[in-house]
Image 1 (cartoon, rainbow, N blue to C red):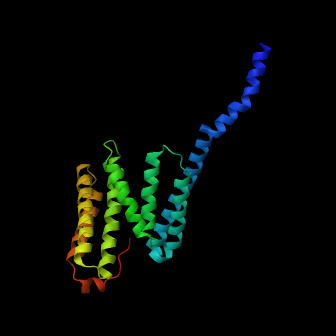
Image 2: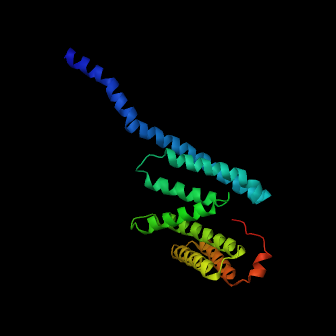
Image 3: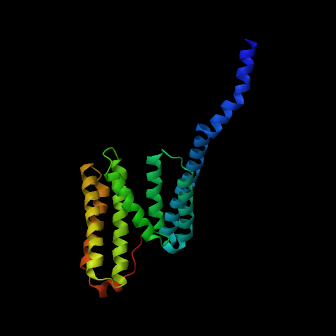
Length: 211
């Protein structure tokens, strides 16, 4: 009996080490990712408040800090946390659009929407949010492409994709009884239609819309 107890006691450091470098390490990484995600969310909220009060340019530095925090959270997140990772990727893409990282945001949102569409059990609310963010990115890309003199056959597919995504989001919101989201998205859809029809000379006289 004494030998058995001694053997068990000697194994304790091994068990502790196995936990630390196995599940314990994963839990620690998850905790770090959670802390970084909370920091990023707080910074994003602060950036929105600054933008509403002082304009987008004043909020740019805070948005940049939020981007860094979201990127850090994704790096710290252990494998297997797919839902959490997608939520972080969505918020990161939204933040990137405020710090001149529209191409990266657009690319990541396209990938995210494709992933969510391919999974029958995917979160429908997240899919709608990702589609709405992608529609926004496509809208701003169209605006910039037109200002840069891109021919119609280049920018028209982009604004058409934006319109389709806005339409899907509006229809989903109406089906789920979310009248406010449906109303706002219908307005976004109308703005996309106007952008496609607007003369370039009129577009050039307008300020770039806030994201």
